[in-house]
Amino acid sequence: MEDNKKRYITPPSDNKPLKDPIAEDQIRRVREYRLSRTKEALLKNDVAAVLLYDPLNIRYATDTSNMQLWTAHNPCRYALVFAEGPVLLFEFHNCSHLHTDKVLPDGRSTVDEIRPAISWTYFLNGYRAEEQVVAWADDITEALREFGGGNMRLAVDSCDEAGIRELHKRGVNTLEGMQYMEHAREIKSDDEMELMKWTITVAQRGMQRMHEHCHPGITENELWAHLHFENIRHGGEWIETRILSSGERTNPWMNECSKKIIQPGDLVSFDTDLIGPYGYCADISRSWIAGHEKPTKEQQHLYDLAKEHVNHNMDILKEGVSYREFGEKEWKIPDEYRHNRYGCTVHGVGLCDEYPCLYHYDDFDVAGYDGVFVENMVVCVESYIGALGAKEGVKLEQQVRITKEGFELLSDFPMDGFN
Image (tube, rainbow, N blue to C red):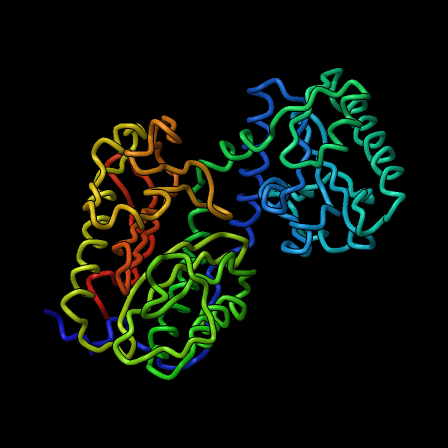
């Protein structure tokens, strides 16, 4: 067995931030690629335009962002992307100045026109919300008639029933728009991969910092803060969850970090779910022992099974493998760990967790769907091993790019064993 007090990650010689390697021309090419993918999806499906409220879909198509978490639950900004027409951004009050630098390789802006958003939430309008939804629907319909070329098919990623009802009254044929955006986002360009790799570098710097500070006596919240610190100081944006737990809180999985003080010999497991620089996601899980002491026999057994699970499933991945074929060949979880198994085996990742989401093969008839892995998809391979009623569990997850021959490992923070 390895010397479990050995540090697998060499501490930095200083505490300075890493140098951002991304050039402006790369970012401009990413914008062009993502906007073209969005428009191609609309053209392919004879859709005049897509109305985007999801902040990550807006980011994908236009590279504009504004109060991303706040606008995720306060629908106060939206975009209208036409298949063969302009990109209109409907922005929150007095925020048009935020996007003057979002340009394409030829110097044009990603957004052709910024207009004031009409919000019809009760929070902002009280009993006058009904007036605003009428004005909003008139505004959207007018734009669709002006730029849609007579096509009234409008994809919508997220919208309350009142808005959809008003659009239907005006002759707009609404379609479920998330499907088009998920498939547009599915294939990453070479430049996108460089942005994602930079986010993973930042995330792993945060993981290294957590590793160095993971000693008995620190709280789970304090340990998690080290990941946030590295992300924010490198220009990262947020972390989607707070999933870190220690000791008995690691089983069952999904506990978020707390004020619990980490004890000697505790198993510590976490899932980064980090949205880093330029909006890309690093979704990586690791487990280790507090203070990097020698694990118990049971802790080592759990780790070995989780590692075998992840490595076996990664080895199946390559272009052309169907989702059903993957399920048929996936690692079969021993019966004693099935009840607490993780919700999926593989999921896509880009600006966040993305399509597809592959469930365990035993669940295929209930919730599964078929498809095919293709080159330049990026996916995360998941495992959680913890028996029902047992004290602890191990979570591991790797982020990889699909290639013609197999996969490229993107999350290279060591997973050789407890470190």
